[in-house]
Length: 519
Picture 1 (cartoon, rainbow, N blue to C red):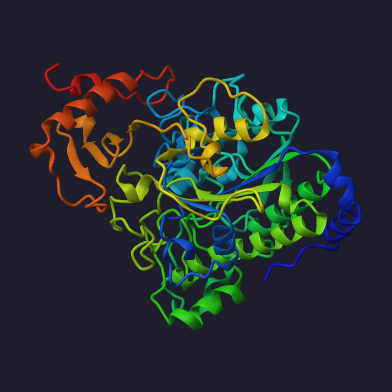
Picture 2 (tube, one colour):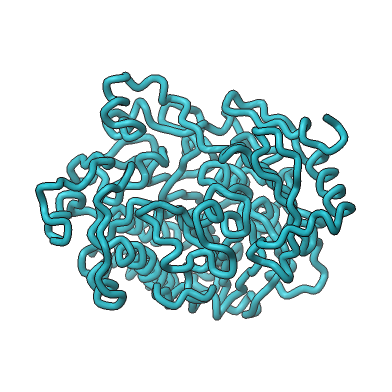
């Protein structure tokens, strides 16, 4: 189990003694936004998971509002995060896919040996396609509203060479990974604190090598070389507790963008062993692709999620000790659906939950398993406990936070769901939601009420939209488009209305050739 540092406890004790002052200093609610990385709709106990233990998050759900129909704006990391920060869906967003604009700068000799993992050797190669300079973000909005702002975890919206690092995008404090390529090792040798690279005390362990054939793959000790002393979720959580303690008398906005449970799967030994004892023995991963070999992939995946759940419990206790729990909104969600690779046992844990759970139906797809997110909002004594099926999107976060904190959001694609959180009956709703995704041969999707339309292989010229009724077919198994051509036609009208060509230099996505009768 994770143990806080003595310095953190000192800060907590000091802040706790000032409880009365904290309550009188401000009335705006704090917001803590915990976003997992590749967590599936079915990976939490409160969403039906039976093997992975998440009691602290489940308690937040029991005390708050659990959304059944919250959607990410994109089934992939960088564009999903960009949509949260700008309030724009994928038809209007700057960033619509994961792109590494600096890959061509990497010497061929390194690429031939390490591939994308060459970035571990030099921070000059780090970073994804950046947000445009001076983009007004959710961080700016909260900061302009008098909040202290922090992002601790994964950024993925611009590398150290760009103008799109967190400190230039509205965040007073940043600790974690700027580049999502290097974020997915859990014993990193360096991390970023604001615009400074800091050593963690771990050695550099470049992923991507197969397990040596000369070693016994069933001996867990032979996997020790892939881990080290300092676990990145713990390094991040230290900073989270410090930030909360130091800002307890001031409204704060904290984005906790953990890398868990994104591959590679790694967790502290004792926590992995707990799940080995619970789940039983399993086959190791010896050919991990771009990640690390792993003796117990299922147990490690479960241990990672439970590790963060324990930290959630510790953070809630910290807030209570400081007297600010009742004035803090806590949100738990994921950036996109679960991955499908040897490191991510999505089928074993049925990570897709209610939705089809297999390769091609989770992350990087516009099926429900790729874009329907777990989403929990807890605000003690302010939000009625229960469940809501209001159709919402990550683009709604900016206007929602604006309404909850008494400010105005910039124009975007979202609708505030603050009335729903407050238990009010009058709530403006989306008539539809729109997605486009240039990855995986190109996807388009529309949800209109309980109707869901999907057009795949757009880059190959396909213009046939499949149609599903999510009320009777949440797994999207029965295409009924030929029976409802009028609905399909309405959806293509929405596609035409919502798509604007991206001005960014990275891969384009053109829907126009695929409008029926307009070829």
